Length: 169
Image 1 (spheres, rainbow, N blue to C red):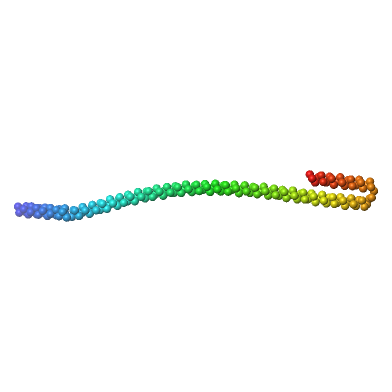
Image 2: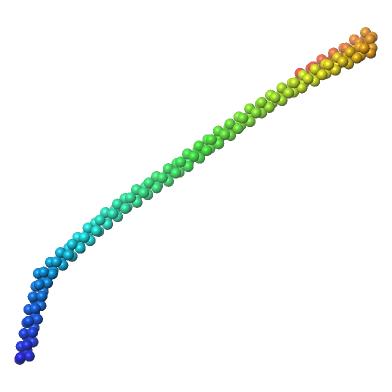
């Protein structure tokens, strides 16, 4: 029985020690652990809330940036269209100006040609008349018969009139 008694006393003593140990842990260590766990939990919740808030903020900024990019792309397209329209209008303006310049130069050239032709015709008439007069004078010197002179002058005058009519055409 003594073996049994020692077992029971060891069991009781161990049980009392265990109960004291549990009491001390519950009384002193558990509140500190509970407080520490609550602080950590609150810190985690706070960090989670802050992370959610930052995530929402980042999502808003992303959406704003995406909207700005879309607006910028639209603005780029509008600017490209405006540039193309301006380039086309300027091209048409340049072509029209070139055509007007060409037309003006053609008219100027035609007028110069017309003037030169008229001047040449006048010069030819002048030389023709001078030559006809020289021939007439020569003929008169060579032949002095009145009838021949009249025929010759008549032919010369007809030739001069014919040249005058042709040059007017």
